[in-house]
Length: 109
Image 1 (tube, rainbow, N blue to C red):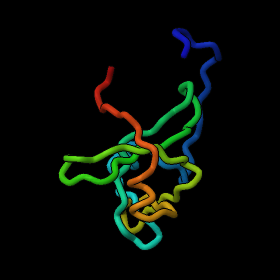
Image 2: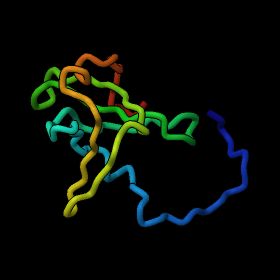
Image 3: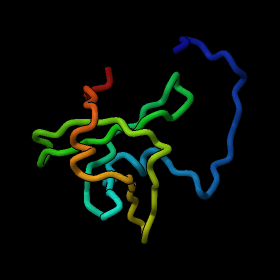
Image 4: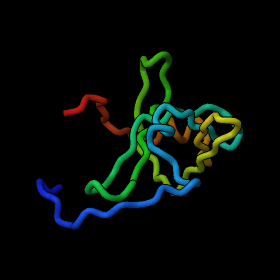
């Protein structure tokens, strides 16, 4: 990443269908059987420009024993039903628990 801006500032219009990251972090991830398979912890933004991954905590109970995986955002569906956000993935509990693990720390450092 660069230490200085390299392009002139632009403004964008947020469209009604756009989703804010603050709505996604903490959202439950369900599979197609409507089983809870994890929770969105963070977003991966490549070079500060492109969303390339969604960090999901899987397994564990009350924060103990959980692990993290990174899912391709193009494989996820986001919905808002009656003001409750949800993320859906075509997976099963075993597949997501056995996915490649991601070492993740919530610390801002």
